[in-house]
Amino acid sequence: MTKILWLSRHKMTEAQIADLNRIYGKIEIKNFNQSVNSWKDVVEAGADCDVLAVVLPPAILADLVNPRNNTKPVIRAKANRVPTGATVINPATGDEEIEYRFEHAGWKQVERIEIVEKEL
Image (cartoon, rainbow, N blue to C red; front, side):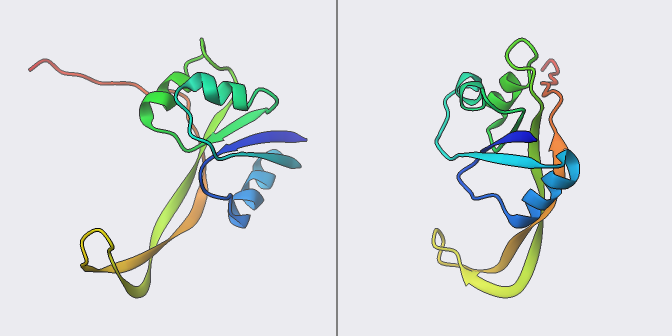
């Protein structure tokens, strides 16, 4: 059985779980919905897990996939933004907007994050 850390404020959907079963076979999900300050918090939370499924800002994600910091696979959910056909009021602006729902579209393993710069 593969134990997977799910680090997100959102509950994993049935479609996400089914897809993880397709990829890893029998799985166990460990939910962790607390904020983290660094890759160290993620590694600590997932110490007893085989895979780290995360929703993180790029800076923490870059440190987490650095092999000096972590050797476990790091994965992220991919989603499609699909219009529902309804409209909603945006609470921040008061404007009417198209409503969208997110549909699971697979998992991706993060292998590295790189910064590409150019001289100005």
